[in-house]
Length: 268
Image (cartoon, rainbow, N blue to C red):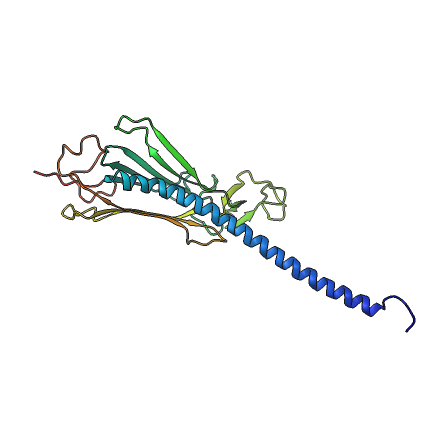
């Protein structure tokens, strides 16, 4: 009873209590940091999405859309080119602008249709194209997707597996850094353009006047999911005479089923 100090049991109990408290604090801090990172990602996504959406919608609201043309350039698996959607817009005041959405995936374990020779590339361009006929200075602005993380690696065709880069940032035949170094160590971005759907409602029916341009650009991030997208819907006013169509982008007056140009009915 008169001995001063701690017994071995008391020291062990204190050690266990302190360890439990430290583990709880560590878990709380880690969860807080993870939540902070995700909120930062959400903020960047909202800023990117809203900035581009507002820019396009201001033109659609203030100028009004007279007609549009959609061009969809697909690629075959294994090619070194991506998928590009081009939407040519002509407004009521004669101003012509172009929207380009570009999507190219590198080949990974869950993107087997991607290319093994080039990095992920995603961007959206909007502005006055170089081949416009409205007499304006070309001004195409490229909106690069925000960098919300990326992964380096390569796709091994022999084993049909995706091999991530080693800790030194280089790619080898095996994930543990063994084997020969692989030259095509490519970058797969965590934030990407996932789905693209651009269409014109009732495009093939010249008798229907309620033509509508639909633009949907969906995004994906492993931590944020797929709930973020640019979704624009705008009515199109068709021209009633060939004179009104002068100076517009090339149209298809003879093929109402064309998928690359709007069919404009010509009045008497």
